[in-house]
Length: 198
Length: 253
Image (cartoon, rainbow over the protein chains, first blue to last red):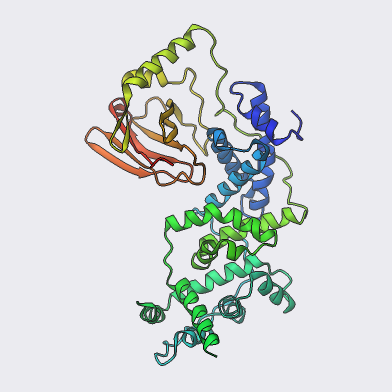
């Protein structure tokens, strides 16, 4: 079976228990999926071993669940999705902390207590402006929530400020991390609960 | 002016809701089950945050999921832009020992199949909203693989004790699979894997089916994952021959 076997033929071969065609098909699938997982893990320590582990996990799941592929013509895409999920699940384990840093922000001082006299909108703006966030973080949080800008727009703005590396995904992670920082302010959260209480 | 104020308050409420969100494991799994579609829409230039608002909100509330999303997005973006993907210098060989051995021809196979059918008939019943499968010595003996293929997992190679598949045991269940594996033949405990395939549903919509395992006086309960699978770890193997597996039947579609 050559490497250009179409998805439907590959799927059919994978179903043929005990045949040489099945072995060939899974060999081919392995080669394809290893490239998929390697592309996601190559920058990590032991990236090759991690790619091999995740591909093996994916291969077994695919073998066990072949009947769940409803569209054999999309079998490769279905298998690739399973392999990518195997990588994501593996990297969420505690022993795989993120190694490749995002263009990120530095720590600043803690926020002052929330001002009870402000309405919700102004209170949140104050918390962001004076909270433990960098300038970029403030732009990212305010840009999304108060100017309703997409992450594509926000990434473009950051690139125009001189940082060529910024992607929309970086914006999302930066925002998630900085909302997590704001969540550490229990006084702020208490005030928010009071505002949102029915 | 009033319209502007109302809009500002809506924006503020949305941010407040994100700050107050307390994501749990279930919310993370629900997000991860849809994040591929979310990324596909984003890479295709569609209004992804509007198409998948729950995913967008969860990614703001959960750093771990945001990082998972970023990994996926960057991989898909490179592929979509036909950038040169990082290629491995070499591709290692897979472990394909999990593939089934060649079928055994002749009378031995038909005898085993007949024994299995008879044992299954005795073992399965529906009680109210549950499907009950009582494991017996006869059933397990008929389900033991003739040559046990090793499950290729990280590290050790567990030994497969039995592998049982029931096709359409109930109108709402397409397939029920049970298998048990142990570190070796001398092990006293092993893992029992139960996988349920539901009619009309597929990965990742197979989560949440309640499975109960009764082993002597001990009872364990678990919910299936998006694959429809749950694993009961550390099960005393000697009790498997009288174990009861109950599957909560989903409502008919």
